[in-house]
Image: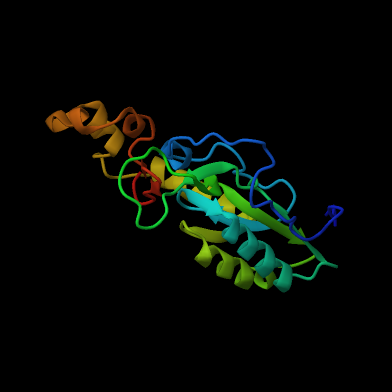
Length: 212
């Protein structure tokens, strides 16, 4: 009822190399995977999906694993799947084995896609229940290079509600935010602007869900 199926129900094949003539070798820029995601955090088409609980890089092998596992497990007549991440486009360089130090930056080895915590990797929908899709979504989530869980629209809403309740009903007065704001023990000396902005809930690519 009210479910619109896309033209192609299976996941699209992603290119291994972006179609650009010459790619500049760039610094690592690990801020790509740091902190919470600002995009693809809510469902648009499907009812179920895979939610990243930490940052990391997906390379082409991961895309193929997701595409093939979901493609084999789902019924294309009653289900559909859509990507919520773009094709690999960030170049990662690597020097060949047994190379001496120096000689400049190495050649491009592969391309990756940056994923931040709280982002949906893909969505599955159609005339199906969460119990039908959960086994293969769990299988995919376990093989990703960052912690991830299968979620439904309801469970994602519930997860966000619980986090908000935990924040509002917190009994412990010594929150990271208060301790950092008061500069207790001169701790501001060791904190980065990221820590102050994200209230200590993210540490690099890691999401510290126990912190309030």
